[in-house]
Image (cartoon, rainbow, N blue to C red; front, top):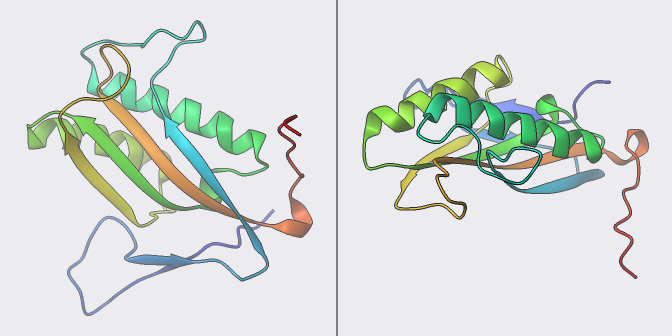
Length: 145
């Protein structure tokens, strides 16, 4: 299945490791994902103190949420990566994991250093928005009426 997301370059702007913008056609279904946290199956925070491992676990969580919505990383239209640290190197460490996971699908992204995140020992969180073709994606029901 081909993604409906189109990444847009801005050749007159500075070279960056991500696209400056992305679009999806009007008939697309947008998927707004909750921040993917580095949680183990039992709900505890995994890999305390390890930015690399927490970023990887966040990506696993994000992948599972995308799959539940009928999408993959190539359907992501933007990301926001939150890193609990005042040190630029910690942000870059987490970002390098995200960048590697998305590969050539280098979506518009924002990388932020924050003071604290919601779970004990949490260092990384990844938010995303995806877009899929309504014709090719399942309808997700919440069970809430």
